[in-house]
Amino acid sequence: MKTQMMKFLFFLMFFMGNMIFVSKHKHLLIVLLSLEFIVLSIYFFMMYYFLMMSYDMYMLMIFLVFSVCEGALGLSILVSMIRTYGNDYFQSYNLLW
Image (cartoon, rainbow, N blue to C red; front, top):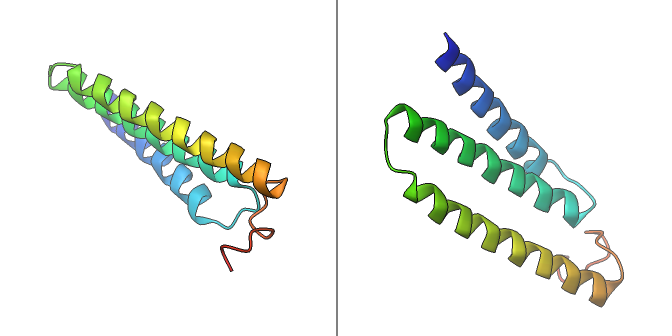
């Protein structure tokens, strides 16, 4: 029963992160935060799965390295867009239209 509840919680976290990402938001920062929430839910699921199957946790370190690199890349794009356009609204970018 507890394992089904944990799987449901991981699925709910992943689904909520995807719903925020897919819905149309005005700010780029909200989209980046939803991507990090999706990565966090995948990390929790992988940690739970590896603990249940008694696997080595080495893959989680590789996953964390890639997720940190993805977060740093997203923040650098955000800073670059704010310096170029002055804000992080999607409507003010001429490149996207």
